[in-house]
Length: 217
Image 1 (cartoon, rainbow, N blue to C red):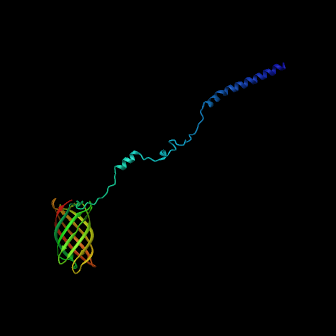
Image 2 (spheres, rainbow, N blue to C red):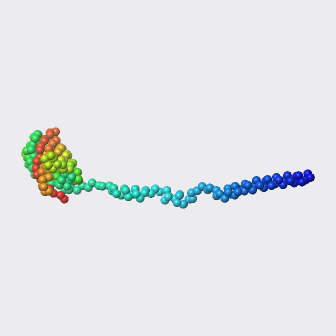
């Protein structure tokens, strides 16, 4: 009788253990089917570690945008037209306003020129012939033509440069000039300018008026 009780108790315990183990088997199977997560380790000489992968390559669109805006260079072309008009050579009169040290401050015959260098700049050499000779070579900024209320088109300019004179009061100094060009026809231009010369400590002032023939190289 005692042996049967022990056997029954052992059988019940075994059955309970088997039932518990059987209920946990699906969960164990699910965890064993899951692949372990493995972090990627860079391998030498692959695309991730080679120098070509580390090199920066700009987008194609950025390269295309920069190629659309090339650097522009300003070239010097003597004799070209500027934004104020054509280059020219002409003759006229210098009317002396103040000073007696050079022909700039006295009445004189004038030979002058405009030599375009770039779109905005030009050289304007001039020779004044009176009791002595006065030479000036100013570099000017040329402005685009504009129409006055009288419907006359004018092109202002402003600049300065070197000057020298001959005679008793000969010397080397500077000159400041401001004037306007007035296009008359495609071949001819009228001009007027105020010139201030600084020679040997003296200020000579003259007004130049004249006409010129247009040219271009």
